[in-house]
Length: 158
Image (cartoon, rainbow, N blue to C red):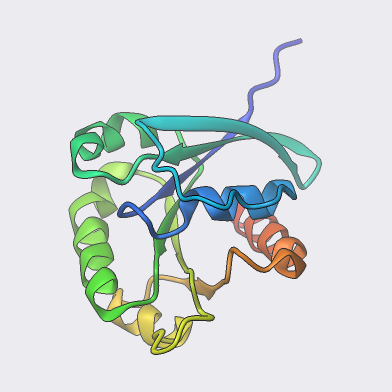
């Protein structure tokens, strides 16, 4: 019997922590050096007892034209921002551009909440027009369970 995997996509500008969030979810140590994702990385995970394929989309400008194709068929798209004023504006532009074309549930993760001057998840949610936003710090291993719970809740409530 064929069983399909639930597809989840991480989307956002380069350097916001998409790969770090995936590493946190998977329980891996974070690499010491930042290495940008080239194009796309896909990893398997189990959420709510179901197999999931988590697509980590490269955030550099040269890969953005592929995002529509990559997100097609996803049950959940996660917009990731780094909680800075400048990046939240870019994330809002991404959301405005893709909101209807994704055809999937979209949430936001306000990453890097530990940095000085970070906008709160609540403030980011307001700036994103009410898009459900969760605060997170991907470099804190103790938040692995919280990250898992966020995704499990969101995929259970499509």
